[in-house]
Length: 555
RNA sequence: CGGGGCGUAGCGCAGCCUGGUUAGCGCGCCUGCUUUGGGAGCAGGAGGUCGCCGGUUCGAAUCCGGCCGCCCCGACCA
Image 1: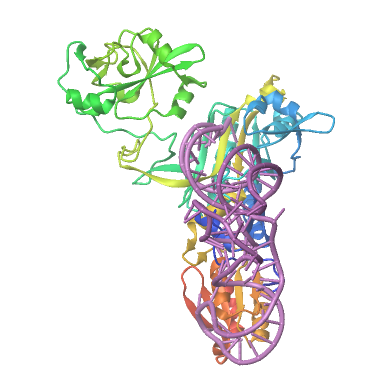
Image 2: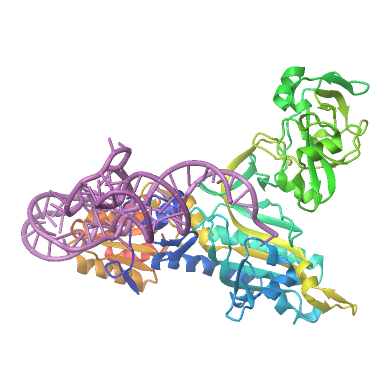
């Protein structure tokens, strides 16, 4: 079937809408692929939906290939499921009532529903299982942004694995990881497997795939040598070594009047800021904890949450004074009674620290001798740190998170009573994993990575059409024949049969970005040929019409 | 939720500060003629509750108040 541009709903625009910022947002709107309906709510127009379906089909094939069983679950779910998991309290959950006042949830993910069904799994003989579905997710996002990059409603492929034990989960997890790698490759995406933070709820180990892009809301930290990649929040970099002053036998008080910042302290004492320490007093519930990091580092709040295992808040000024007997600028780890979590960077060497006495600091404070912390990783890694694998330099780049894969363990199965009878006759909870990909976001990432100043340059695997036939005036009949030949050869073909000028047709073809463009015009027909142009490279060749289908099939 | 910006024709914008006839411009759209290999020319034409509500005024796109929507930064993001 040949798509005729004269009949297609394909509203291309010369100018991008003023509220578009990301390249993918601008080009998808200009190319007539998508239109905004509300904040974070987009319609996929005919061409956009074709691309979306091609991405979906790639995902479907790869998940099927690892044993995924596709099903479909409702978008409206009873609130009870969410009370059972406890996730009803998460702010982004969309809630609503029916006319009798019963509570419902519009899921942002389907762990609850899947686990609900998994209760019908009864024996180890049925395991492992991998279930997946493509369905609409709703998220009450505080802030949607960037066109398709962060939506409030979107279709997600989510799959769930059910295994009898951890070893099985590891295998299911790895199978998904491999499948995802194949998906990105087939979509023409450059993407990296990264360590990520799982947050507080429901997950134990989580990883993501990130695609470097021009616009995105994540930061990918990577080693210049290509052997280490991580999400910014989870990255483990090795900071430079400090320049330490002469070591001291014991800490020595030094008066530091009016010195409240690390910069001022380092300047005042004439020491390397990296040879100082910084105290971050927090409350974990009712329990005071002192976080300690190197003076030139920044605290990673995500890592601290992970370390503490629960949410925390900074102490108030009153609490600080009550616990330490000094103000915020003079806190240190020596001779305090609260628990101390110190960053690994403070393990060796002597540092300047607050003296817990206003206007005073201590020189020569040494962990293990002068205080006894739990050592943890709570510093924010930065560009310029050394790679934890090879010591190379870490660099940062903007990226999009394409997919997230979690080892859920038994979090949901325990809550839902989803158990099975194992070989040893014992009833055990299913060991679960969950794996998500958003096709619309994937589309946006592809555009971010495949475009030039004239428009999109779709990889053939996801292009709305394989070939874009431009019919110039006067040779409509021959253009029709060329399109028919390509169609017969099995290509998806769009024929621009509109009454427009050549320049407009070319500009639209570039914008829409199908991988090959066939120009049929009087000039070419004198040779009994057409011009075949590769969208991405711009290479153009004159090809006799009889050879057309053979040539284009292999482009 | 905090900070900033915007809302006038399908898209991009001017007009608002300093109220005053039929609210403008470019692109797009419709009709006709001429053009026709990288966004044509001429002529004619259609299209707007100036985001909404209220107030001030003889008179409001313009001034004042409230609300709504959208964008960006931040917070948030299993």
